[in-house]
Structure formats: C-alpha cells, structure tokens
Amino acid sequence: MRSASLLHSFKYAFEGIWYVLRSQRNAKIHLGVTLAVILLGLFLRLSALHWAVLLVTVGMVFAAEMFNTVIESLIDLVSPNYHPLAKIAKDAAAGAVFILAMMSVLVGLLVLGPPLWVIIWTYLK
Image 1 (tube, rainbow, N blue to C red):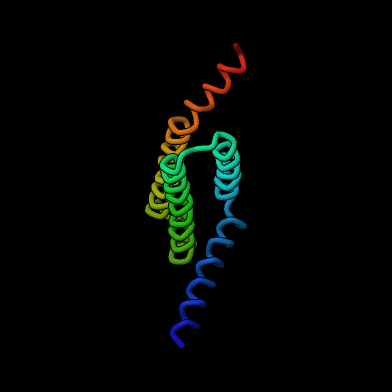
Image 2: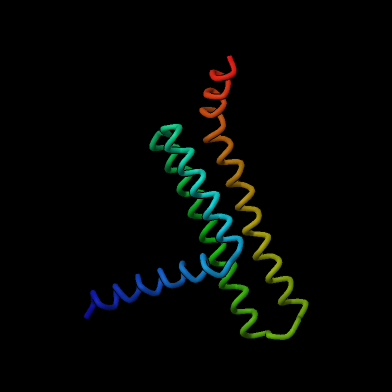
C-alpha cells in the first residue's frame, strides 16, 4: 500500500508540473530558454560544476513559477472579485519570479559567456 501512495504522489507532482507548463505562458518561455541553455551547454562541454550551477538555477526559476501559479490560483479561489490586497499578493509573487529569472540570466552569462566568448574570439581571428 505504501508504494502505491508514493506512486500517486509522483503522479500528482507530474500533473502539477504539466499543468503549469501547459497553462502558464512564462513557464513555456522558461522551458524554451532552458532547452537553449542545455543545447549551448552541451556544445560548450561544460564542467560538472557548471552544469550543477545551471541546473540549480533552472530548477529555482521553475519552482518559483510554480509557486506563483499556486499563489495566483489560491487568490482567485478565495477572492474571485478584484481586491487591492489580492493584487499586491499576485504582483509580489510575479515580482519574485522576475527577480529569479533575471538572476538566472546573470548566472547564465557568467557560466556560458566565457567559453562562448573564447569560441567567438577564436573564430573572429
């Protein structure tokens, strides 16, 4: 019985991930950027440490996007009509995702930029 409940937990988690990827425009953007970063990382043959940094960063952005979806859904459930406090909560949650996304861009530049620059510089010579 215990393994069945564990399998259900995974099933529900994947349903949540799938819902966010299907329904949230920004999650689709994050996914597209993630795929581009993975392809670039494979092309650049990044070290394990660089992969770890990128994967943690990507995971944090996706988790933040999912928490943002949770917050927005709960607010819509308990406050279907406009309320200024609901707006603040939604805006703050979206702002948190935005901050993480911008920090992930900086991490990506720090990790991918130097080896990419070497390739570009070598090609231009």
